[in-house]
Image (cartoon, rainbow, N blue to C red):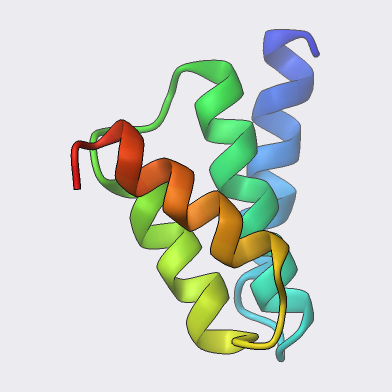
Length: 76
């Protein structure tokens, strides 16, 4: 994606985080990926977003897997 598309995606996803679950959980999951793709995530932000997604939707598999990878990347 282009930098402008990533910025627009991040803006829209941040607004969706304020919605009810499962929309908020999906927004957190996707926002973590968008920020990572754009190189705009500060250390720990990706894990924090994924933790929020897991908290909101603990029955989902993909958010758990993504969180595990984020923890691995952070040396946790």
